[in-house]
Structure formats: C-alpha cells, structure tokens
Length: 395
Image (cartoon, rainbow, N blue to C red; front, top):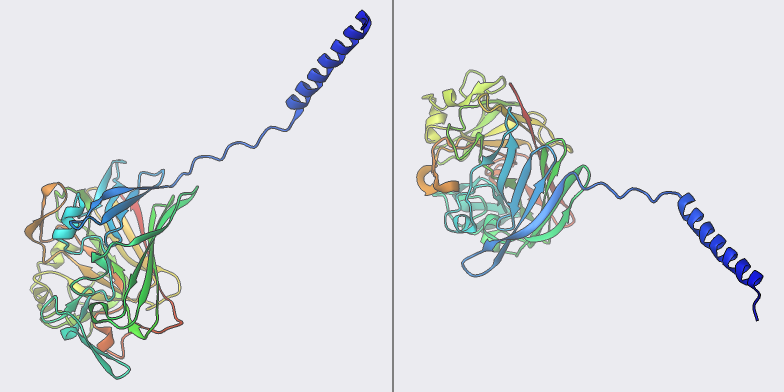
C-alpha cells in the first residue's frame, strides 16, 4: 500500500517534470519567422477557349509598385500591361482585346510573340544552302510575321511559373514542326516574361532546331503610354532612338539599303515628337502610309547583354518607357495601318496612330541580304534574344 509521503513525492516529481518541459519550451530558440509573402506574384487562371474548344490560360505577373502584366497562352501574347502614371494611377498601356474571341477572329498582331520570322521576307522566298524555300504571301507581295498561321496563332504550353521576393516569371513553349509555313526544321522555342520590383518587364527567347533554318523572334506589343481606352494618339509622345541609320524601303516595305537619319524625320538621336514627324512629306514617310514602319539600326549591333535602344516619354500622363535589347534593330511602327475596322478593348475602334510598336529584332528580309546580321540557326546552336521594357515617370 502506497504511503501518503510516496504519493506526495510522485506528484512533486510529476509537477517538476511538467515545469521542466514548460521551461524548456520557453527557453527554446524562437522558430524562424515565416517567410514574407512574395513581393512579385505570378497567378495562373483560365482565360476562355478558342472556337474549337482549345483551352486558353493567362498568367498575371504583379509587383508591389503597381505594375502588372497579363500574358495569355494564345500566341504567348501580352494582353494587358498596367503601369502607374505620374499621379500613381495605374492604366493599361497596350491595345488588344478583352477576350480570346478578338485575338482569334481579328488578330492584327496585338501583343503577340511573332515567329518564325518577324517582319517581311521579299516575295516569300529565300535560299538556304542552295535550296529554295517558298513561304505564304500574306502581305502582298511579301511574307510577313511568320505566315498565315505563325507563332502568334498557336496555343503555347506553360512550362514554368514563378513568384518571388524580387521578381516573378512565366515561361511558354511552342514546337514548330519541320515545314510549318514553309520553313525548314523542327524548331523548339521558349519565351519567358519576367517582371521585377524595378518595374522591368523582360521578354527573353531561346530556340533550337534540328535542321538549318532562319529565325527572327519579337514581341509585337502596340503601346499607348497615355492609356487604354485611348484618348490621345500614341504619337503624342517624345521618342529617342540610339540609331544613326535606318533601312530605307521600297513601296512594298522591303529594305533597299541603309539611310542616314540626319536631316530626316527619322532623326530621333535627340527627343522628337512623333506626331510632328508623321506629318512630313518625306518619301519614306509617304511609303509607310504616312507613317513610320522602318527598321532602325541600333548602335552596337548584336550584343550579349541588352543595351539602351529606345526611350518613349508621354508628357501628359508622365509615363515613360526605356527599351534595351540584345538585338541589332528596332522596327518602329506608328500604327499607320490601323484603319478603324477592328474594335479593341472596350469596343474602341483601332485607328491610325492609336498605338506604336517598337519591335526588337534582326533586320527585315535578312535571309536575302548576306551583308545583314545573320538570322541563320543550325543544329547544336541556341538562338537567344533579350529585350527589357523599363517603366518610370517623368514630370
């Protein structure tokens, strides 16, 4: 039979043990603080379906500074880009469509990834290693932006989505079969959109092939820094371009050779108001349907890292953009062929000068101009391209 003393001792030991455990718990080093929420997020969601039922998704990248970018899998397209103005009010700065229906039925290259070959190839023909290739003529009399069903009209696979403290990204992938749109080789392409806390939206590409081919990729976003819906022409902005020469073009917009910009409406070596330049009667402006649709030869040519190429400043909104790229050229397009027949976001008609594109790329028709920077890609090589869009405000 247990004595009263043994019971009391046992109880005392039990209390002491509990106290020791409690003390140990209290003296235990504090758990590491839970990691802070990602400052830059990537959110994946459904975004409708094509007429044949193919599912389309969207990934929205968003930072803590009020900049966000929505990219959809159809054409790896930048559908929406929100950027604050000088008063801190965010506004969409790219034209496009509110739903997948617009992108499928009235494409017009708004925000898409263009491939296999951005820009024009004369008469849809080129020769590679002695073999002639014939492409679709979709911009008479030339081939334009990869053909009738280029990279912009396919649903890309989402390969990777990342959020983080400093940046977020999404990577899309498309495999173009040998012979697609007349181009040789099976080409595997990835494009990655990255948004960081510095308000940089970076678009980077890589591609490989199993046969010799030509490739020239770009993003075809059409910007209006004043905001969408559009209340002022995009050409009411000041542009600076790091280029001393452009490629002059014939009446079908195929390059005929280099032309110095000095003394012409194409001289943006110092800030120039675009709306003043497109009023010119310069023959090259007239050829462009009273506008600019020309390749500017960027100082430095092809570079391993991006160099400054273009600065755009909208004095009214205060929004500004700097474009840096590894590419040797920027195709500036002032929306000269937007003719009001297509309704964009909010049902607004897309009209002349409503938006401007600055397409970082190699030169138009390069496969037919041996002296131009090469667009050839061989097996075992990797095509790369990086273009950074940095957004900021000016007073």
